[in-house]
Amino acid sequence: MNLDDIPGGSLCVVDTNILIYAEQGISDQSQRFVRRCASGELAAVLPQTVWQELSHKLMLAEAMMRGLTSGGNPASRLSAKPEAIRGLTLYQAKLKSLLDLGFGFEPCQLADLVDGAFALQRKHGLLTNDSVVLAVALRLKADVLVSNDKALRDTGEIETYAPTDLRF
Image (cartoon, rainbow, N blue to C red; front, side, top):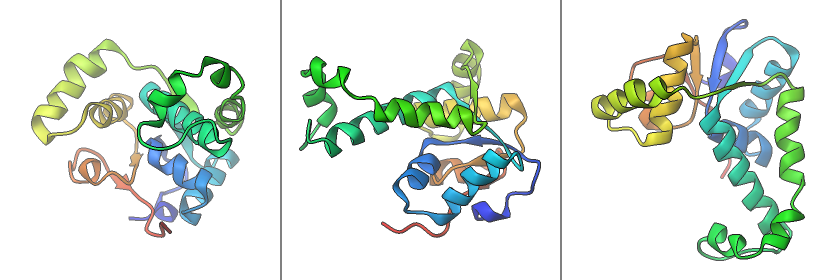
C-alpha cells in the first residue's frame, strides 16, 4: 500500500528512507506523508537509530554538496577533515525542523536490541538497524511502519506502507 493510503490518526514509525526520499524530492508521496505528519493528521515517531542514520546521511550529503568530500567512502574522507565537519550546519537545521514538524524521537531501549531486534533478526534475517526499527514499532504498538525496505515489508509483523512513485 502506498503512503497516501495510511489511515488518518495512525501512529507511524518511520524509516530513514522515507525522509530521504522527501528531502531529495524523489517521491511526492513521501513529501505528502511529511505534510500529513506536520498537520497532525498522522503521528510520526522516529526511533533513535533512524535519527542517527538520517543525521549521518544528511551530513554526508551536505559535505558532498559543498565539495568537501567525494568518491568512495565519503565518511572516511570527511572524518579526516574536522574543520570541515565543524562548518556543516544545514543538516542540523533539517533535523531540527523535523521536531518542529511534530516528528517524535523514541529512544531505543536495551530490550529493543537484546530481546526484540535479535529475535527479529533470527526470525526474518534482518539487518541490525532494520530489526531495531521493527522492534521499536512493535513495542510502541504502532499502527503502521513506513518504509521502502522490502525486508521489513515482507516480515508480516506490522502493516507496512511504502511509496510507489519513486523517481531515481
